[in-house]
Length: 252
Image (cartoon, rainbow, N blue to C red; front, side, top):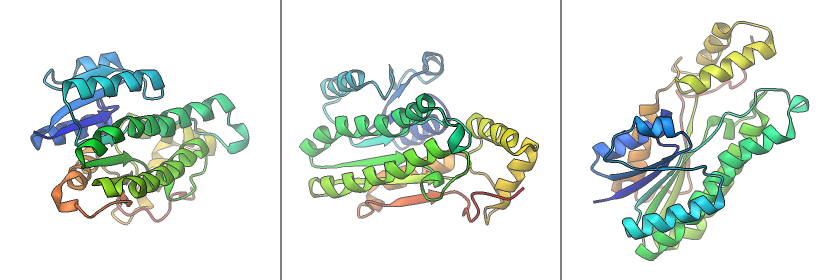
């Protein structure tokens, strides 16, 4: 039975990823910083409460995975935070660093932990949850956008370094995903633009050719594909699942 580790797997995109891989017959291990969210997850998923930016905790996690599972087929480096929504000159250094710690350092520590396991077994798939903010500049989202651009550089480097060991690395770049996170971003951006949240939401939808936000299950479906044999020669790629975003900064 194949095995998948999903960071931030107790809610949102992470939970959808866990459900999708479990439905495909995978053994699922989720980690999350929220104990409350973890208690709501199925008990037949392995569960660990930790912060992905905590190096020692991540070392302990992968030691536990090796001892309990003996291997790992798929890593979904999914943990992320929206970060502040402000102009660059208004950004605080602490909040900026926190966004990078979760989105970039957390992904780095996840990959650092899984690579020795995957190299030993001669196979593996690493899937980063990124964002279209890593493809465009996003006003008011400098720490988030910076972290996602950096994540793509990490992904492409991992693909080059680990490819000869049978390991593939790819990134999924969601657009606006329905849920609490994007609702919060929209509300904060509306304040910055001195307008209503509904106007910001409609402007974002109008910036896609399909005129829609996406759902977490859309990301999960792409992740299952990227982990599958059907994608055996897909590596080093950034694949947008975003309804075709053409205008990431809609004029309101």
